[in-house]
Amino acid sequence: ELASRDHVRCVSQVVGEALRCANVTPSQLGGVAVTAGPGLVGSLLVGLCFGKAFAMRHGLPVVGVHHVAGHLASAELADERLTPPYLGLVVSGGHTALYRIEADGPPALLGETLDDAVGEAFDKVAKLLGLPYPGGPAVAREAEAGDERAIAFPRPMLGEPNLDFSYSGLKTAVALQVEKRRAAGALSARDVADLAASFQAAATDVLVTK
Image 1 (tube, one colour):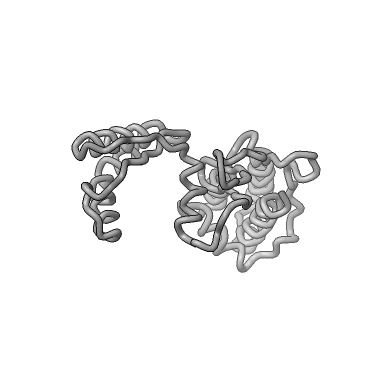
Image 2 (image 1 turned 120 degrees about the vertical axis):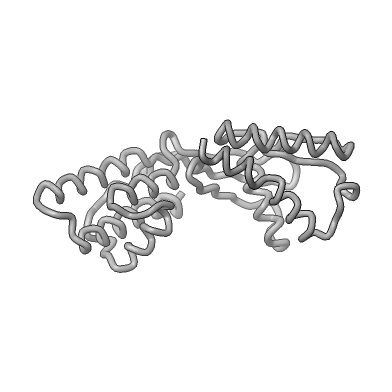
């Protein structure tokens, strides 16, 4: 709900700024591409409705784009040296997936999370450790002062003969360690740093290895 409201408030300004930065007018566009899914339904609906209305107002064709394919395409837009074929790892709050991108045809899914996304796991672990949102930067900052070998967290799916991921069990393992330390007394700053570092190492080891 909060994300959807933010989309409503910002979408027209963001599109306007994009056009200004590109130094083009709507009449110079060849069409409108808009994220159609997967993702947060409310936010997708805001973007889809705006995209369709913008396209209708300016007499442009509109095409729906797969959310994750859009993320992958943005990498090519950001660096012209990146050309197919290549591997694309999508890591976000809602998605963890590995794709092979070819010059022709849609991205081929090689593996994805079977439960929680790694970004969600970072957010949940940050909350368990009393760190602010978003969890990724907060956990990374704490991890700098910690020992990644302090706690032997599991590396889910690491030994499986596939390219899938899983982060639900790792998240639970962190929760159990936090509970154990709180039962023995307060969670110290050292505990937080070591837990953050050990969790981050386990989560990223799987991403890099796959």
